[in-house]
Length: 74
Image (tube, rainbow, N blue to C red; front, side, top):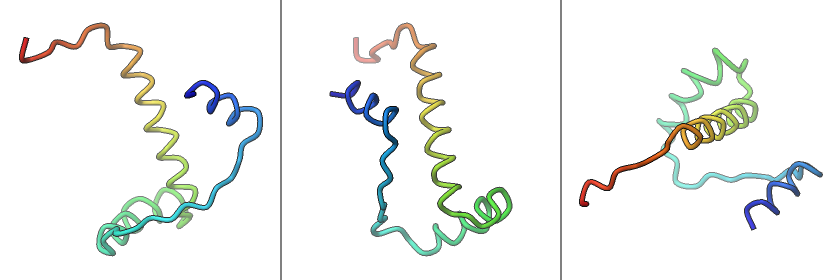
């Protein structure tokens, strides 16, 4: 199922509206002041898209470099 979703996203990039619930106003305000305004010219949408892409790329990098994870209970 995961691969099928990835193929759909590549073939036709569907746009979705995204709503965040129960986010503290102070967190959003600080994110906007410290990240969105200085690095994305105030474009919250661009900031979130870019950060999502970066975290996915980072996850791919981490997973590609992990060969063995030791279970601490073993």
